[in-house]
Length: 262
Ligand code: BV8
Image (cartoon, rainbow, N blue to C red; front, side, top):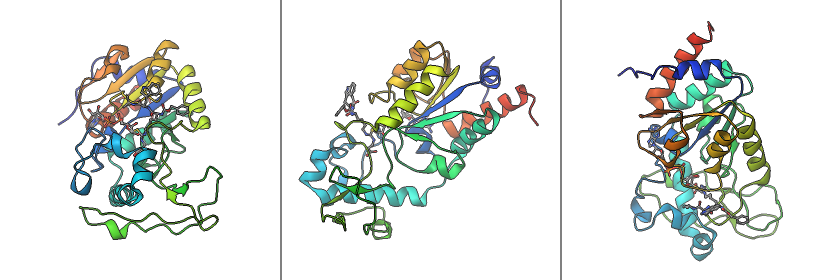
C-alpha cells in the first residue's frame, strides 16, 4: 500500500542541508528483531527488558543475562536490514553529512550501508571484560549458534583471557552512563541540524530521548515516523503514522525527486 505523504514532507527533507536521523527499536521491528515494548518470550518471559538490561541482573545471574544477549545476537545475525534501514542509508547518499544516531544495539544500519552510525547504547557485537580496563576483545565468545533455536537458554559468559574476569555484553545498561564520545557527537549533531527525523522510538529512555528535544530547541524541524503516538508528537512538525519500512522509502524517493536528483 503506497504511503500518502502530507504536503511539504518530502520538500522538508529534500531541502534540508544538515540532517540527523535518530532511530529506536521500531526501525528493526520489521526485520524480526523484537522491540523493548514487545513482551519477552521463553526463558525470559517472566521479566521485562528493563529488569534484565541492568548490571544488577547480570551479576546476580550471569548465565541468564548472557544467554539473553546471545539469543538476541543470534536473532540479529539471522535478521536482514529492512527497507527502512536501506532508506536511511539512501538519505546519507542524498544529503552528504547526514548523521545517523541510534539507540539500537544491532548492526542492521551498518549492514544496510550506513557509514558510521552513532551507537548511544553500545552494540551486541562488542562484548568486553567487566573490569573497567579496556582489555582487548581477544576472548572466546559463543558463536551464537548454540542459541539459534528460538527458546534460547542459559549460557555461561566467557572469561577474559587477560584477567579471568567475566565477559559482559558491550551495551549500556539501565543505570550506566552512555559512552561520552557518542553522547557528545549526538548532542553536537542535534544542536546543528536543520531537520531531525526520529524513527521507531518511544522517546522514553533518557538521556537518549533528549536528542530530538535538543534539535527542536535549536530550531530544527522534527519529523517523526511511528505507528503509535509518543511524547515526541508535541515537538514534531510532521507526524507520519505508520511503519518505517513502509513510509521511509516513499518519503526518501519523494525527497530525491524534489531535490531533482537522478
Ligand atoms: C543513565 C541497551 C545515569 C541495552 C538500553 C533522566 C535522565 C537520565 C536518566 C534517566 C532519567 N530518567 C530515568 C533515567 C534512568 C534510565 C531511563 O531512562 N529509564 C526509563 C525507563 C525511564 N536511563 C538510564 O538508565 C540510562 N543511564 O541515565 O545513567 C548515569 C550518569 C552518569 C553516571 C552513571 C549513571 C541508560 C539507558 C540505556 C539503557 N539501555 N539499551 C539493551 O539493549 O539490552 S535502552 C533500550 O530501551 C533501547 O536501547 C532503547 O533505547 C530503549 C527502548 O526504546 P526504543 O528504542 O524507543 O524502543 P521501544 O521498544 O521503547 O519503542 C519502540 C517504538 O517503535 C515504539 O514507539 C513503537 O510504536 C515503534 N514501532 C514499532 N514498530 C515499528 C515502530 N516504529 C516504526 N516502524 C515500525 N515497524
